[in-house]
Image (cartoon, rainbow over all chains, first blue to last red; front, top):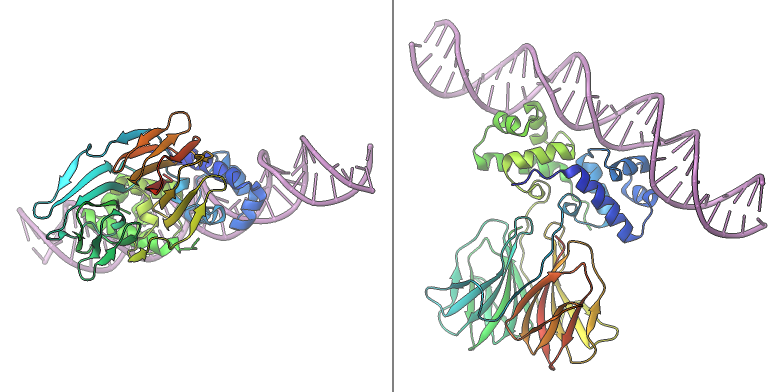
Length: 184
Length: 184
DNA sequence: GAGCGGTGTTCGTCAAGATGAACGTATCGA
DNA sequence: TCGATACGTTCATCTTGACGAACACCGCTC
């Protein structure tokens, strides 16, 4: 995938996160239970911290650990309603438009779902660890794991494991929703 | 957030990923450029690897590194419209409801935005690397970077870097949107 | 200006991780 | 049966990360 240089990235991330939190080097070191000299060396790019050390720093800075080792990247993009790659269901009147596919690193896809009443859209289990988030925008729908879907009204939100069979069944016409599929 | 025990998790992940790839311990060690004895110890839970070591293993196993330290985890959760923690704007008629806060590992927050016409909701730049995704559900709004926001209609999608000043300005009443803030 | 509390740095010491050789075992083919 | 190759483990050795004291620096108060 990438041979990203963890060393410099970690150094930058640590200092950046610390500054953001408005904490001193000594304070962070104290919270993390490590020597401030260690932190100093890490922020200066000198060092190859152990997992325990890095983890402690992640906790102290209240960042999920991965932030410290994986770099960023922005951009602007717009997809108008009706545009974009679509994924239609064979059986149900259901269209999913892929808005933001998983850029290697941030593992999640964002879709807009439009569906009409009819047979439910049933999805086979995905990869283990997948979690799906659905926010209903308009209409009504029964969403969730196949066994016991939840009925959603506009504004409702539900998340469920995607590695089990799950369904999306529109109960009114012009039902639409936003779906975030998280590959964890 | 949590003081998750990275030790045992890493041990399990390493062995799991290796088995999945159908590789031998020696082979993985060779590809990663580390001693197989080191790998053996890590898989047995004895050890606190350095970042370089773990990174090399991540490359060898072709997994994004985070997978090795953060375990999966499903669950079902539902938040009804109007429920959930809210973040209201001081100046604009704007309410953001936090649906799924960043569980250490998946770096993203999911919000539902409800806003009324009026002064635009202006957000100061966030962390570098933050990307925001907005899908408009109802109404109309001007969304995006402060310099040149984009006008959205229902179903439209836009993403923009969150580390620059950005705005959300409702142009009709009952404007609502889903916002995914990606911490990359 | 002397004293204090705060910053982040450098350096000697020690424990801990990484190493490579040697080991015990299992499978294969001559 | 006897090598030969591969597996994963254990062990003595060496390297290296983590520690803590000492350091230089800055701003503040008295």
